[in-house]
Image (tube, rainbow, N blue to C red; front, side, top):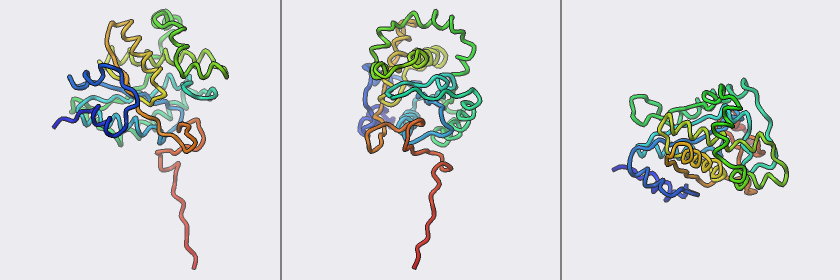
Length: 255
């Protein structure tokens, strides 16, 4: 019996928000969907687990999962619900992190090219590295207003403490990722943590305005620490998926 992907997530409590029409699209045909991963460390962490589980259930339901490692957007940093700007990494540091994350994802998803819904790993640096700034703001920037970008909760929360133009433009770059995948891979759905809703919907808006197409968003609840804050590579108290970063300590019992 074919697995209903949305129902599977719903009974597991893994849906935070879902855009109208997404469930109908997934029930209609094999759908390509993606999750973005920010390569600011050389390991995934426990905060990524729900997104990875969504990709796994998506593939088990017969749909095609894409994991997009943000080699380009990782050079900027996502401001979503962070209190401060993160350290910028070099191209070499990011490439090392991308290679490590790729090996981890291959433990969860099937990349067998003989399958119609084989998973793929992509790096947005491949389509962003040669895109000139003037071309980007002319081709993409004119379709999204500053008012629209400032209305996002992730941006509004940072306006009080200050946000650089670099981080402010992050949602445009993530939106362009979705647009590129829509054009080149037929990708109709982006998934992620609940803090990504604003960035994801910017992508659906770009696709609507630039292509006249329909694309959808689905987010899951965040895994949070005891104090209610999110796990993140730049946050304290992280739990890494790489066993080398969390080696068990041995102890001996005396007496």
